[in-house]
Length: 389
Image (cartoon, rainbow, N blue to C red; front, side, top):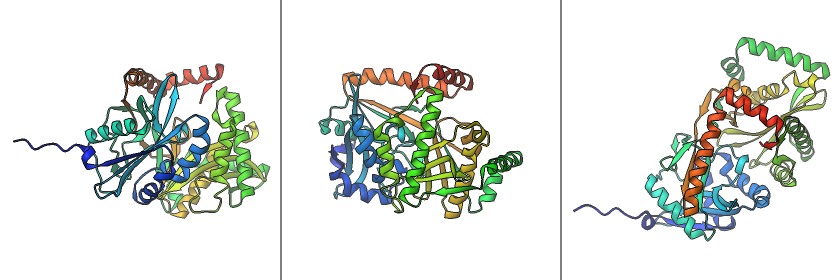
C-alpha cells in the first residue's frame, strides 16, 4: 500500500496579517537567524510600507508559517496592490528593493509543491483576494541557502544583481578589481577634482550631515532624471519621507536602515551613496553625482565608491552589493553577477490571464536589457519620451 502524502496544511500553520503589528514577534525572531537581504528586514520594509507602499495603495499581506510546535518557520513580507483591475501580491519594497526573499529559519526546507499550496492557501485566507503572485528579483540562493520559491513556476529576471567579495586589505581588492590603467586614471581624476579643494569621504554621523547629504542626493538625482527624460518616484513627498525616516531618525544606531556617504571636494558634495548593512553585507540603494561638467568628467561616483569600499573593508564587511540594473561601473567593481528570477503564480481566473501577459512582458524586457544594441536604442527612446525609471 502506498504511503499517504501528508497535506502541508496539516504540517504547517499559516497565518496572514494585513497589519504588520501581529507579525512583529515572529519577524524579529527570524530576522536574527534567517539569511535574507536587508530589504526584508523590519527596519527597511516597515518604513517603506508606511510611506511609499501606503501612497501606492498597497495593503500588507504578511504570511507567517509556523511548525507543529507553534515556532515561526518562515515569514514572507508581501503586500497587495491593484493595478488595471488586477490585484497582485508582491514583496514589500517595490522597485526600491534590489533582492527579495522570504525569511526562512535555518534547518527548515519546503518542497516546491508544498510552497505553492501554502501560498495559495494564504492568498485565499487573507481576505485581500489577490489574483496572482508577482514576485520579482529573487536570488536563487542567499548565503548558500536555497530559495524555497526557486522550484515554483518562474523565469529569469530582467536584470542581474551585482556584488563583490571584499577583502581585509582594500588595496589588494582594488588591484584585483581594477586594472593598473584604470587605477592610474582614477588617481589622475582625483587630482583634477582636488583643484576644487581637498577630496574626502563624508559619512553622516549627525542628523544635520544626513540632511545635507539627502538634500544633495535629491537635487542631483532629479536633475539627472530630468536631463534623461526619466519619470521618477524620487520627486514624491513619500520618497523623501521614507529616506528621512530611514537615514535621519535612526542616525548613529546599529539598526539604521540606510547610511549616507558623500564625496566632498572643497566642502562641496559632488557625489552621494546610500545603503544599508545586514549580516556583514553592504547593500547599495541610492547614488547620485553633481552634473556640473567640470565635476562629472572626474567621475566623482567612482571616486566615492573607491573610498566607501575602502571603509567597508576596514570595517570587516564581507560583501558589497551594487544592486540590480545595468551599468559599466558595476562591472568594474563587482566580481560576481548573481542571477535573479521572477515567480508568477495565478490565483484567480483573471490571474491566469495576467500571468500569461506579464510573463511575456518580462521576457521582452529582459531581452532588451541583456542585448547591448537593443538597450542602447531603448535608452535613446527614453530620452525622447518620458517613461518610468
